[in-house]
Length: 240
Image 1 (tube, rainbow, N blue to C red):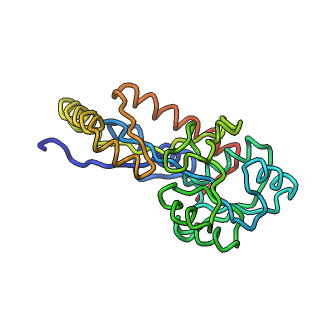
Image 2: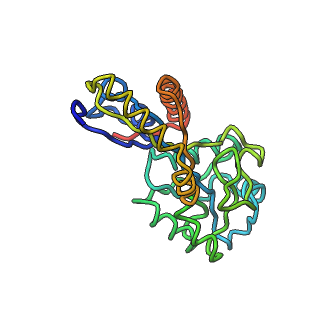
Image 3: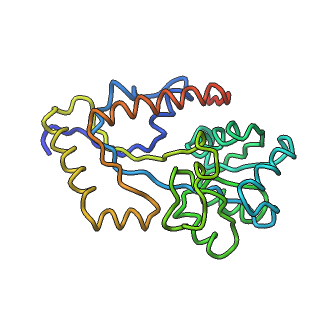
């Protein structure tokens, strides 16, 4: 399409980066024009079955009793996984040791083997291990339960709504993209998200569409960036 220099699908780490890194090769506000939210993915708080914590209240009680001795994994420092766990620990007023890994597969393997105690994992990635009994799912990150794990409570339902986390994906173009083209792309996103087969496919992936008008998306991005900044500062997360 004439006038579009580049398109990207940054995940919610776009809102986290400015608060974590001292220098970035881009400006998240000046260099990008938000087109629209595409969707959100559901994550699950999973633990090793031999941990002796079959429910979320059991895990919380155990974490508090160990006073910082238990460990949780992430797919890397400053990732959405990391921020969710900091939100969760803040919500339950407890401490734990952060163990960053090089990605989700490694962290899942380490949790299933018992080398770390729990992990906040993409639901679709963790589902085979949950179904095989190698991992226990204690809660999902969103406000509502997942249709893929209807028996598992949401973090909000469990009484920790302040720790609820939405992992989103949005469509952006370069800031110099002509407005008519941005508008046309936005209309295309909204049209695709309304398709029944797309909704069904997203649900099977543990995700959901997030149709949102451009102005609302811009405000949402500002809100997410501000929230991430507050959490990063409170948790003392820093990457040189």
